[in-house]
Structures are given as C-alpha cells and as structure tokens.
Picture (spheres, rainbow, N blue to C red):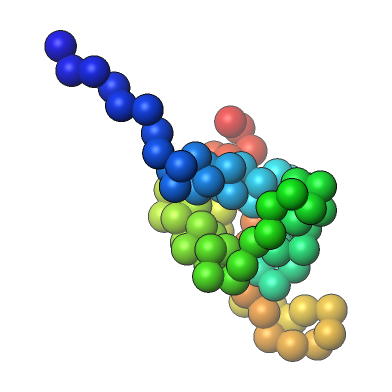
Length: 92
C-alpha cells in the first residue's frame, strides 16, 4: 500500500495563491496587473504577491480550465489581459 506524502511548502503556497486568485475573480473579470493588489488585500496584506508568481499561477489555472483570459482595455486606456472565472469554476 502506497503512503501519501504530505504536501511540501511550495505546493501549499501554490494552492493558497490559486485560491486567492479565484476568490478575487468571483467579483468579476480583472486585469492581471490588478490581481496582485487585490490578492494582497484579500490576504489582509499577509501575502505579498510578485508578478513572477502571479503569471505562472494564472497560466496554471487557465490550463486547468478554471479561468479564461482575453485582451481588453484597462481603466488607464492601455491594452491589458483580463481574466475571468469559467462556468466550470463557478459550479464548483
């Protein structure tokens, strides 16, 4: 019988970041630059998110079918990639 190994710290942090991203997207589509600030506020500033962590997490969630992205125009009139939850994510 194979024993399950406990998740390592990196896996826990990835899962936490994924959940915080999904939580911010519940309120509607967000440009990826906004996500870092929203996640930090959601975690009551206990988690500082760097762009180098955010983008791989967004791609991971997109690969799993939880979020989709599309290009649009941000509040400051710049081209930005927006992320939103998929129906699959909303059902779960």
